[in-house]
Amino acid sequence: MKRLVGLIVIILFILAFSLLLVVAGESIVPGRQVRWLARVYLNTSYNPWSPYFTVNSPESVTSVVWDYRGLDTVFETMVFYLAIIGSIALARGYRKYIPAKLDYSKLGLSIIVKTVTRITAPLIIIVAASIALHGHLTPGGGFQGGATGAVAPLLILIIFSQYYLIRRGVRKESMLIVRSLGLTGIGITAIAVFLAGLAADVHAYVLQNQAKATAPVSAPAYIDNQLISGTLWFFNIFEFFAVLAGFTIVLLLLTIPEKAYQDGGVK
Amino acid sequence: MIIEEVLVWIGMIMVGVGAFADLVAAIGFNRFRNFYLRLHAATIGAIWGAFLPLIGASLLATGCYCLGEYRWFMAGGSLVTAILILILAPAGSHALARATHRAGIVPVEPCIVDHLDEKQCVSGGGSG
Image (cartoon, rainbow over all chains, first blue to last red; front, side, top):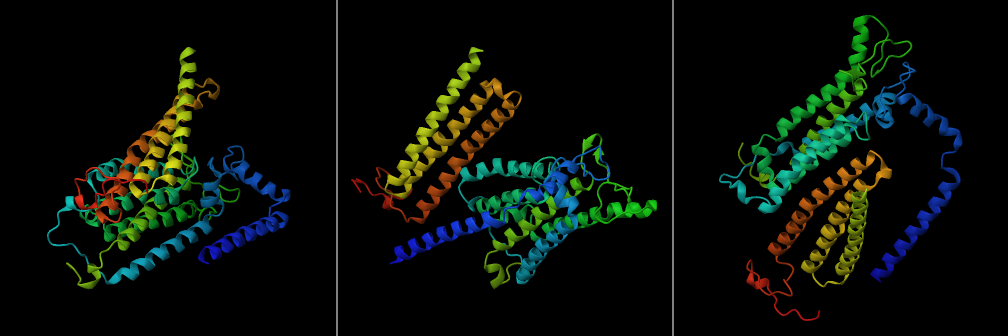
């Protein structure tokens, strides 16, 4: 009976999915008339010959995310951090709990897994940093880099135990500071060009990156002949730190032992 | 010129051996009768079926002039991925096997000797 129900569910799912595909193929697939939009974005993302439209970034996805629709992304970031603030507020009642006598080498998984993690966790952080720092050149960006980097604290939490991280200063309070600095950096980067425009007494916009026809100030596209695409590079760096710290906070909160809530532990 | 030819041939043989090992691992994963034996089949898939063909792909890309300069990117990428798999796959299967043995939910069968816990050892085995 149970197998029959499962079989019927699978068959219904396949039928529904094929129906959806048929209907979607009839109507929802975008037609040729929207292709000019993609062509505009691809043509202007990195185009030194039209300086008032370009973003100076070869990666069109990052250009769209942090330049063409930058305000949208700022609100997206806000939603993500509201979720993290909510989880911190939920865990408000707990106190620091560290067992009195703790032999750190006995905690966690076996020494083989620990050794492998010692090799790979720094590699994960390096790959994440490269994803974030190259976000304006290759696919990736701050959020993707931060989410990749959060795998390293997750591995350490499971394999070395929570106390290993806490003893090395990766605790909720310090991660909150990093996250707040990252968010402040995002905010400052968003209004930096606007403030520069105010100082130079010319027209400028919030979240402006490169100069526009009516707003001649722009963030530097090159530093020391290296392409940084104006504000995009700064957005990616700050977002990387903020996302990495935010995910680490949530992972730390998830692995709090129940005793920290029950008897308070060490204050 | 002959070296490139040899590299391409060795790489193709390694990829072929990898495909065969993947098939063996898949059959073993379905047909073996308990957790430890299936884990053994899975690690065959990870080392012989992923590490070896990646090294082969690296050699293949190195010897293939038609790819131009980009062959070094492909060769390096395959080599790094292969080394990472070589480090990570044994650690993963070790962690799985250790956790299972400590939980004591799977009898070790067929077993000749089990120094960690003699009680879990089921000798003989037979055809299950």
